[in-house]
Length: 132
Image (cartoon, rainbow, N blue to C red):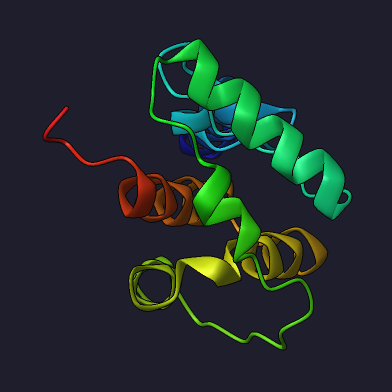
């Protein structure tokens, strides 16, 4: 009888685990990026032109000042290697012109979208003063 209880307990734990994995995200998106309130896909990093266009569209959508000056300074091919989101944010805070290179690095190396989101926030702050 004990052996049957043990098997049912293992089966129950396995089912709970599988259901929780399905709830967290079958599509491999982190939970925070599944929310409608958080746009983890604001900017397009396929090409510099698409990136600039997506930044312009975002600034218009949210009524932000023109990012034109910030976009003229974008550095397109800088070798980047970061270990966590804090390093990405610090990099962009110190040099916002590296956002495109960082975005391409993060996508190429399949880093979490949250890293991109936080770095983009630092980029937006670089040209969007809160003193509007």
